[in-house]
Image (tube, one colour):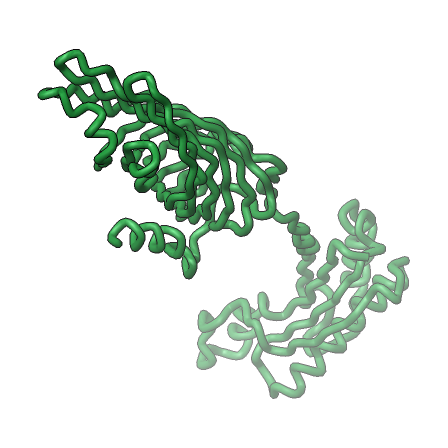
Length: 345
């Protein structure tokens, strides 16, 4: 009963698991294994009767085992696996000239394999299912053969060297192989094996291609002093201002970007009312824009913005209580027109 419970637990161990195996889902795999088998819990009255004249026995319960297997990966963590196992043999040698006896088993197995990933390449797994076995005894020169189906369970670990190739190390147990009433003996068989697995149709992990975000357009900025361009409280370009605009337009930097989008922004100092300064800054920006257009800049690429006394350059550096002429001089950096040319046309 205990062994049956273990087998059922193996079959259902991963029914609710959210882990995944290293192999891709919906792919096939195959491999081979070699190892060592061990027979234990040996029983069989008929077997013992045939060697009853012996008073001492030498048991050889360990032997070479091996097999081949193949499977289908149903999901990332669940596979169905089948294969052929040669489980080796167990020899018994008695004294008093008792002839040797041997139990040899092999079989075809089918199981579910549930995997739990420790890393992207390293899994632990459990297998649970059944083996259709063929057991044969040879006692005193007489051979007997019997077939049947028994539960099996296995626990192992698998490591993927590449997406296609993996190695596994496994312990497997098959319950009560052989019918002592028919062939004289039965035993549980365990085996430890190392195997090599090839996975078909694996896909390389490819990072999704993400389109690069467009680079922010480079902006060229030209700062013009309003005190050079205009008279005090005026939005009309002075001759010096007109010459400055012409020089700016003919500069290599402006010629290289004159067909790009251009914004002309006017600023004033804080002397006077806010509304007045807002309008003065817009008018001065418009005067500079008109001069640039007259010089040859495409009108459809030019826009105007007046920001009044906002975005002060001087900040709190100029005391409002100083004489008016000194305050005007101190606030000169705030009175400006900025020409911004973007990298987009």
